Length: 152
Image (cartoon, rainbow, N blue to C red):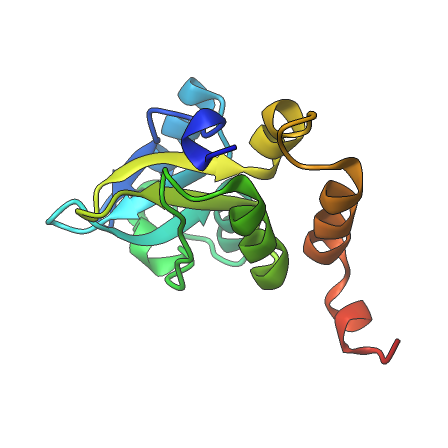
């Protein structure tokens, strides 16, 4: 099974200069929890989540309309390609403890987002991810940071 078979599309995006109020409205309107952040050339340079918004607003007295996405986004972006096997993408999600990966084609254009929800809803079947593979990935993604540092 390929990422393209289960990814969410079209991707919801914003720009580095987008303010948090606009980003929040976009997430609400599109019922999503993340936006791929694009630079001026339309390339993914970050991801901003609803949690990023909540945490940053809790730490400031500035109105959301005066804070740019660039200030709160995760700039370390791991991605996958539409033609990548879902197992390989899920392994990357587990390794980096990510719930979402932007799906980027060979030209660098964002084509969708692969979320753990997509894997759960559409990727677990006789031709996709096994229940054990999913459970293992979820354990890695959801484990408290301290649990990852303790010896087994």
